Length: 127
Image (cartoon, rainbow, N blue to C red; front, side, top):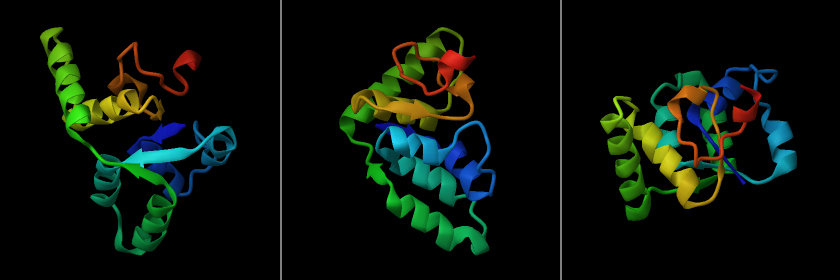
């Protein structure tokens, strides 16, 4: 199963289907899901004319809520990397924690936001 990050969904919704990650090929490999935090990230930047298509895509994906286990792990990730001198976004840490907690492969476009070696990241092996 794959956990899609917001940048992948935005890329797809903005009509760039031939980008680095193709949703159709991922769908052939397994179930696609997302986090409620990704909903937030996608919807905060949606234009009015995009809202209907955006909601249709989001509704088609299994959505995983942030629970206390994910929040605990996300906070631990954020603190661990901060202590190492690396600032990561809180939402990115929670998305990574969601993937780890639910044994999912994360699918982002921006790999540098997810440096955790224990995290399975689609495309990491290509870089």
